[in-house]
View 1 (cartoon, helix red, strand yellow):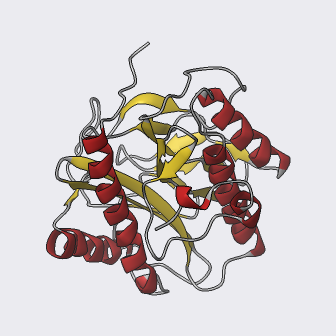
View 2 (view 1 turned 135 degrees about the vertical axis):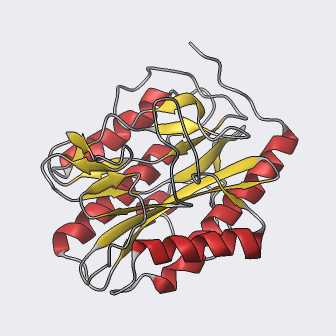
Length: 277
C-alpha cells in the first residue's frame, strides 16, 4: 500500500491559503450563474479571477494524467447528467439546469480543491432533493474524520445516506490526498464498510467529494476523453471540500465567506472551529 503523507505545519499553512482561495473563486462566480451564460464564459471569468486577482494557477489547465489528453480548460463544469470533468464549452445554461463547478488552484506550490452545486433559475424538486442529499452525504462523511477512524467509515456513512434516499454512489471516481501534488494517496471511496481501509492520522489532508446519481450508478465516458455522464441519463450531483485531519477531529481547508453552511444536524455535532471562515 502506498504511504499517505503527513503534512508539516508549513504545509498546512500553505494548504489553508490555497483552500481558501479555491473557495473564493466559487464565491466570485456565484452571481454569474444565470440562464443564458455559457460554461465557456464561466471558465473565462474564473480563469481571469484566478490569474489576475488572486495570482493563482488553475491546476486543471493542461493537466494530463497517464492515458489522458491534456485537460483544455481552467475549471470543470458538469451540467445535469454530467457526473464530473465536464469541459466548459459553448453550451448555454438554461432555467432548471443544475451545475457543479469544480475549482482547483495552485498557490505557492499548494493545491486547493473544492466544488459546489449551483441552480440555474428554479430547479426541479428532484434536482433540489438530489443536491441536498449529496450535500448531506459529503458532510456526514467529513463528520467521521478524526485520528484513529478509518477511510471505510467515511465511505460507509455516505453510501448509507445516499442509498436510503433511493440514490446511487458513483464508484469509479473518489476523493484523494492532496498537497503539493494534485492527486496523491489515499483514495477516499464514497462507499464501503466501517473499520476498513487506512487508519486516519493527524496531518493527513484529502478531499471528500461524493458523486451521487438520481438513477443507477453506472457511468459512460464521452468522446472527449474527460466528460463522464450517467449511463441512464439521470441527474448527478457532487460537492467537495478539502479536509485536514487534526489531533481532535478535522478542519475544513476550503472555507470562504460565501460557502454554504453545513446542514443543521451536522452543525450540532461538530466543533464550530472546524468550519469557520
